[in-house]
Image 1 (cartoon, rainbow, N blue to C red):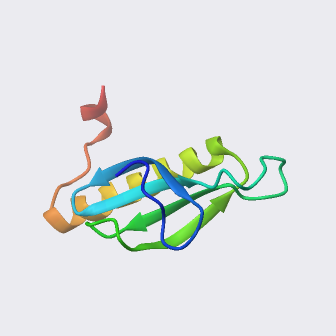
Image 2 (image 1 turned 45 degrees about the horizontal axis):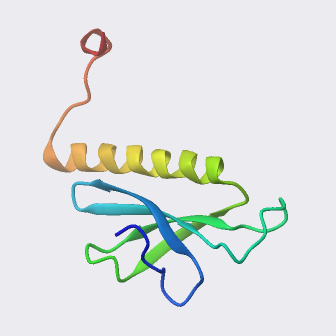
Length: 95
C-alpha cells in the first residue's frame, strides 16, 4: 500500500508493483537529503501483507530506484513464467 512506512525505518512506500505472488516497492526517506551522498531511495520485495520488507537495494536518486524496480519486476515475470510453464514469445511474436 503506497504511503506505508517500511519497518522501523523512515522510508515510506511511494510506488509498488505486483507480479503474481510477488510485491516489489520503492521507498523514500524524506529525512535524507538528496545531495548525491545519501541513499534516500530503496527498493524491496515485500510479503503479501506488506508487513515484511527484505532484500533492499539503496539508491541516491529516484530514477535509479525506478530502473531497479522495473528490473526486479522483469526478473519476477521470468521466474513466474517458468513456474507456470509459460514460454517466452519468439522474436517473430513480438512485432
